[in-house]
Image (cartoon, rainbow over all chains, first blue to last red):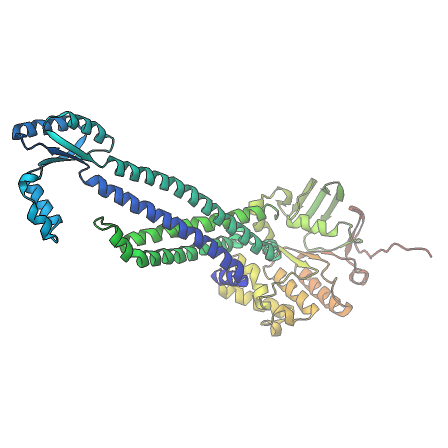
Length: 289
Length: 230
């Protein structure tokens, strides 16, 4: 059967090539969308893992008042973690951030930096409520929260996912139709052979299994090509992206993640190839007894 | 063996066969004659299960052919041998590969295939042509290859649709000799033809069709031509 399969694929090489290229292009775009989505999720997780709400405290705030405020925020049930950052801790962080700029370090002492409460919410919707409570507290000088960044990113991911699903759906449909048309053409070219085989007593499996495999092989080849292109693109852009996303640990993309992408592409390729050839066979087999 | 009971086959408004009934015994050699369009090929295609009758019943052995489901049709066809006027050989396969095909389809072991193919090719006189491709063979050799492919599985019934239609008289008589040999070994042979010489030379049963109806069924029949008065 496999000897015949090879023969059938190479009997009309340009048709086979067209099918492989169309599926490759589709799978490549799908994997790019997938990686964009996965990368954005990672970025969102990174932002979510950082304290998104900071309450800067007045210098006169007493430790008991600070503890009371912490307890009040905790009682809302919306805070995952609350850290007290003293003036000294703030200075340490400041020194670490500006270690390369001695001029800036000279001018700053712990006295001029405010103590603060850094709050990580359990979910984004809790930020606003906690911010409102903090604003009313007399020991709070000012508050700073990244609600806008995170909600914008979150909206971006939702939209990206939606667009990704629509684009992937259209591309997969195009791929299935391409395989259907090309396998259909191959069936038409081999119509007489198939009819002879059937008259000689060949079962449907004997006749059609090579066609199913042909479609699946198109899918596998396309999965390999699109994965290679995707990986190549990632490796090429990694040096630039590492700088762009400095501090956010998404680059370099791990080999394990890329193996998962390869597995997914092979799965999609198999489904596309099989479905296309299956529909082509169904269409043809209705006309032959 | 082959029983047609009031079989009618219509293609839309065209009636290909109308109320056809006949009974062919096991081991018989029967000519199916009649002009083009009389319904000879339709009879063969009905036996093969390519067509379903519009009405009536077809029984071959114990099997009611018109009741065989589409999914099990292939098992039925394995019991039959078929020879076509245009040979229907695979051009990219050698004589051996073409003859081996029905056995490969059935999943028979390579050793048994080799043995049965060699024996069959010797029987039809093609042992020396075993590794040639159809394009390298003459018409008679092509039809002998087709015949070898039809008989390699040891069918109970051999259906031949105009097997001598494309051959010169000498080659046609060689093919007829082979068909007779196959029949002498117990295989029922139903041969559609409008070759007068062959029918008259064999003195076998003749079922004549005209416009889809059986118009004659004679034990030792002859080919009957419509005479035109001038």
